[in-house]
Image (cartoon, rainbow, N blue to C red; front, side, top):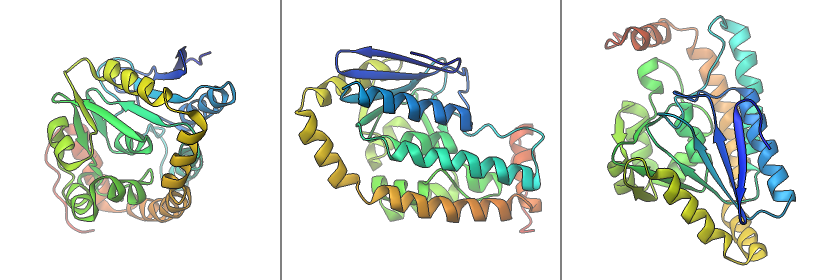
Length: 255
């Protein structure tokens, strides 16, 4: 079972969903639809745990908005994208994300939609939104404080600083540390551990622990999207994006 950008394979009771948009593995609405539909099909077929991974160098470098999209057009794309992002949080099977290379911006949000994250010393994690001049997204308002706490969430979001997998493990953002290049094998082994548990008990526990999360993410996405739409119109956002493309430090003016 596969699409042009998502390969799905199974091993025992575990389903492996591999994003195939290397090297950066940007996501858009269509890719999120493919992930949620594949997860639903695996659940219906009796699989018990999922691994979310990516081909090539990086786990995910964020959202791929059309390069020509501006103003209302970009807002429309964001609305459609976030509607599908919410569906990822409705998946009923536990998900282990294998995070190699970089997980940046929305890519970090995608990793945080999973139950667990496996990374290495070579992994780079960054919520770089403030460095681009606009508001964070992908439900990080709800997920990141759950994972690393409120104070660390403020640090990561306000500064936009990049951390490696070892620091990620020290703050709770990374759950297991693998050797560089072994992120996927460790994630798959962990998923098999989860799949060995009684499936009805596992799903019931997960529903209890994550039950409020969907509503929290839905509310967060509305706020995030509103603020993104507003800040995308600012000079600082234009500067932040231009500076990123030109690989130079941004010069923000507060306008």
